[in-house]
Image 1: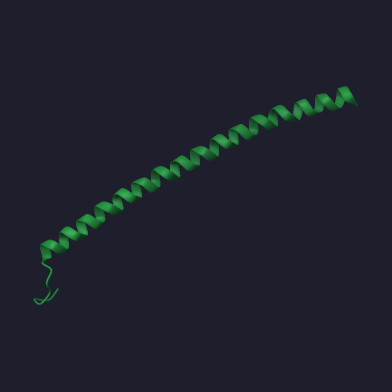
Image 2: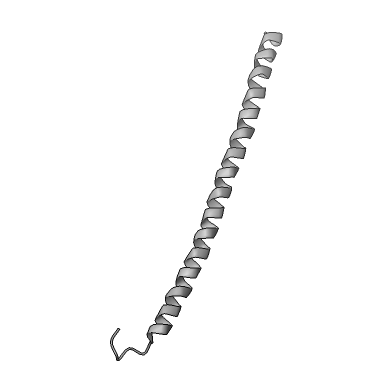
Length: 67
């Protein structure tokens, strides 16, 4: 920064600190959101596995009984 700049070093440093703080907050929110999405996908996987593990034997029994 040259001597003719209207912003002081203290103001510049305060601005950088505020931006850094905001980015840290946003990064924390993104990390929490990503963690939630991974957990949601895991839950959907467990539900899908449960349905498949129930439907396949029921279908086999139905085919054996009706066939």
